[in-house]
Structure formats: structure tokens, C-alpha cells
Image (cartoon, rainbow, N blue to C red; front, top):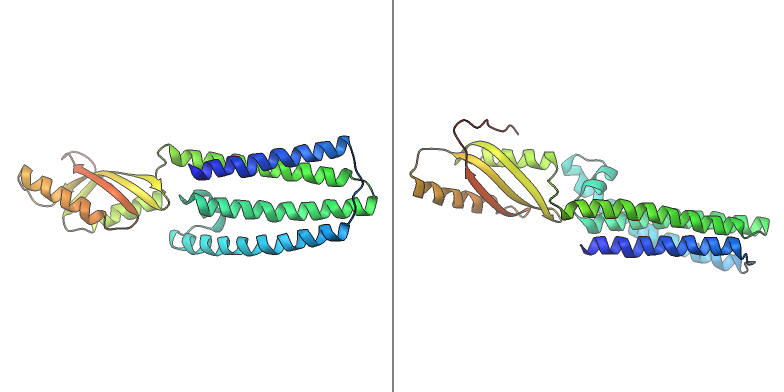
Length: 232
């Protein structure tokens, strides 16, 4: 939720301000001065944003590798909104700084403020696109987004590897936080216990499954005899 608000505030407000500033500059152009100072500010900003961007890339790659995802795929699919927001913000910032530097250079060479104004509008449009993408992704995770199919397959394999479980006939993993899921499913327990013993075994199986730091909770029920088994 807070990452959704951050996308609204940082990108939508930033986009609106940038586009408004560009339009005002087109309507009421003003000559610029101190170009060198502008280049210095842009260069320092690029270095600082670049350091932050490299850190986010390093973290995203380390998380993507075990899941066999490429960098962009993982950033778009991850349930960690902070990582996605930092990566998107830094990418947009670096791109915006390049656009701003090019616009400032064009302003200096031509003496016209029009390139600077157009650059501001382009940066605003880019921020708006990033905002829409982030808002949509965060919205999806607020309304019961299911975990990645590869994570679901891994969960099925983990259950089937437990000696207590013969079959898994239903399994749903719902994302409830960064790298956290809630599990509901139907399993066929090994053996032929009485109802009271089965209830105890199910609770024990749920507790065993929840020992994983990625599982926030689990609710397991018994499978019907005619239900087909799931394959990992």
C-alpha cells in the first residue's frame, strides 16, 4: 500500500510538475545562464543515482538467479515493491538526467529555450509511464495475486517430499507480502487414521510447512479419493 502511495506521489506529482514546467517554458521562454553549474549538478546527480541503481541491480540479480529469471523479468514479477520502486526510480532518474543534459546542451548551442522545455516535457511523460506501470503492479498485489508458477511447483515438490503426504490435489499460494505467501491446499495423507488423528496430523503438517520463512501461514484439507493429483 505504501509503495502504491509512493508511486502516486513521486512519479505522478513529478510528472505533472515536469510537464507543467516544460509547457510554461514554451509559452513564456526565458534565457538560461550558468550552463556550467547546470552540467555540474547533472553530473553529480548522475553519479549518485548510478550508485543507487547499481545496488538495486545487484540485489535484483541475486534474487533472480535462483528463480531462473532475467533481471527485468524479476523486477516486474517480484513481490518486493521496494526493490521494484527503487529500480524503476533510479532507471527513470538516470534516463531523465541524460535527457536533461542533452536538452541543456541544445539550449546552449542554439540559444533557444525550446529544447530545454521539450526535454522537461519528455521527462514528465517518462515519469508518468513509470508511475502507471508501478501503480498497476502494486494494485495487482493488493487483490490476491497468486505466486509465480515456479514457486507453486516448488511448493508441490516440497509437500510431496514429506513422508506424511501421498498426493496433493489442490494448492494455491497467495502473495501477502515481500517474498511471503499464504498457502491453502488439499492433500492425501499416508495411512488410514481415524478422523481425530487426521486432524492432528494436518495441523502438524501445516506447522512443518510454515517453518519456511517464505510461508506466512497454511491451511490444508483432505483430498477426495477421486481428485486427480497435481504434478510439480
